[in-house]
Length: 235
Image (cartoon, rainbow, N blue to C red; front, side, top):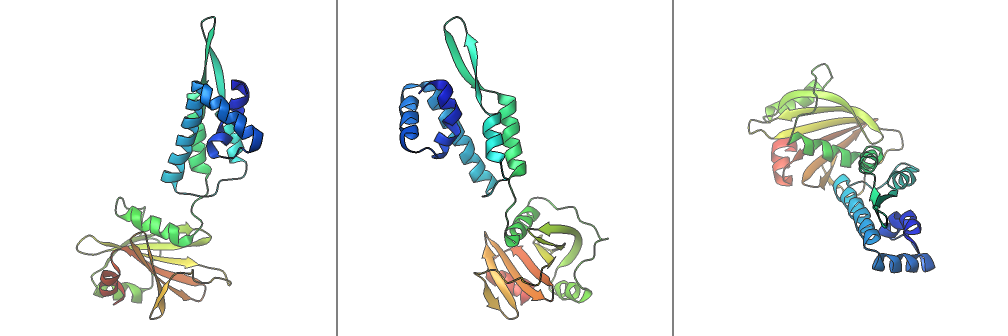
């Protein structure tokens, strides 16, 4: 196998998608060609970083082909007898940003709610008092437990649309109240624990308490222990 042929397969080699004689030939070439071995390592490292940091699983159709086409290495002459292969840096960088922007967001609405709540600890989302918060009764109940309404915004969580309202306690702890419209076939996700008329989940340090009323799912969510959540939010 020559370098030109290997470079057409480097992404597949790094991903472990080669088989049979093609895999054997690629392995042999990477063992004797330092430049191609380095290209394989770089490809594998880039993919691992994206898996770890983006944390997503599915990509848009055809994206893999476009990324591989954009990062094909090209020969650069170094004098009369020497050449080396380089990946076009700007193109490669653009391809990586395209991957981050085109990879689908987590499909689970609860996963996106957790992402919202985690963001509250670092920055406030764009909130508006023009967006209708939860019912006045709910706001009064939370107010009696020490929660002050900061504002609300409209949003989309997976296939659901609705609003997120943010409350804050005197100690700076924040509580998100999501109200998401769902279709007639909606069922509560598996893995929850029923607590009264609500179903509770614990995901990545975030407590979520869900109730289905008609075509709206009400979700109370905050970063705290279950005991603290019970005493400060639902208790």
